[in-house]
Length: 120
Image (spheres, rainbow, N blue to C red):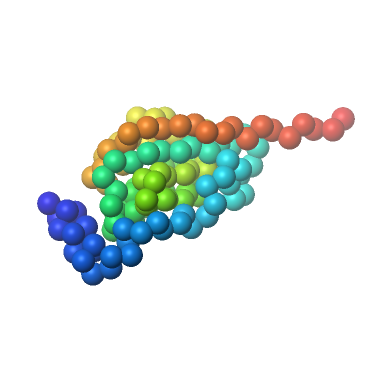
């Protein structure tokens, strides 16, 4: 209930939150600083409608192990995670988003960064 009231308040105070808010970083497969063996995961989140929603989801997902960076596109309802090392399991990602008060519609492991071949 609290989240709904904040979203409604956010919409009245700042109607621009409903506009196309670009992600803070480009949503590209090779994200910033991702090393070999890292990955790009794209998550579609149901229920994000305002900047407060984005802030809650971001806080929860940053606590996942091995998350190097993330970007959220509010209009598309998509979260891009750049992960190094072991990938967090889908159920762990889903649990974090549920803890923030939202639902996961789809998780796509978009890109695995191949290790650079070592020269002999």
